[in-house]
Image (cartoon, rainbow, N blue to C red; front, side, top):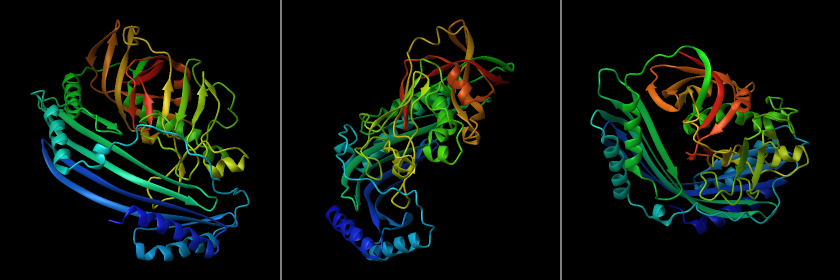
Length: 442
């Protein structure tokens, strides 16, 4: 594995080489890490593997045109620098390019690194996975069908022509499991958890999945109607990410691919609802001292008391409007350039006992098909999984089969309650949300 000190020196050399090759500006992004992944098939560990990785991505800007190249071969870094510049030269010049980020003090963040995960052994990882399986087997009539354990630690290094030089290390751990009942009428469920430190209760993940599968047995049908719908965290986050998030992306706004064009300063949601994107949230899955092009992380009010306040920007889209980036440039790998995404989207709404307050409605644990939603209009139609009827303030019968459909902007206006069950679901932090009226299709 390449030592970190050698990666630093390689990055600094790559910056100089890219500029010498003809780049007006250059950015070097390096990543080094270790990952342990374990697959589960039925109630047995199927495959466990450890991987070490490192790589470097180079962005070269020539007259506003951006070129990119990447490699994980130290002997080919020089070649990658030249290729990035050549790539920029064959692209059309962009007069709207305003430059890479300037050097600024990174934000102070906490809770994104756990030494225990850096040094965790494969045996310990297998023990955690075994707990996951045992939890899924804790209800006799339910069995696990598949699952996964993953933990990783990485160090990233960003360097650019304007003096940005940021190093950061983080850790992450994730576990998930799918379960089904053994009975003639099969019901299924899934559950997961994700964290920055080794504080996950693996047994509980499996137990929750099995309990949900068990409670979902012998579902009854429902009539097609408009009613109150309680979207539990997984369901609400999935719908939100596939409908609202694209319209908040400033690149989509600037390219007329958003329903929120011209809506800044206007009501787009219930008065009680606020959405905050916070790249500095303690122990957040999307937390870091800066975004992935070197802009310091910050807390941005996207929607406040129902009013649209801001879109999400990276350096390029912010420059086009002569404003500051919101710190939402995110990379999925050293092999890709940054794109705009949420960091930690926090759903803020007054909480209450929304189940007790609901006389007639349904509760939805998760959905299938949110990715088929229209990202411009916000229209969606999804299958509701592990759903239950609510009658007179109590959860009653499971629902056998149901679809829910609607429009995200109508949904946001219709939110009239939030539960106390706040969960971190990747980059979305949300409780169960109640929508006063949605169409359910039996």
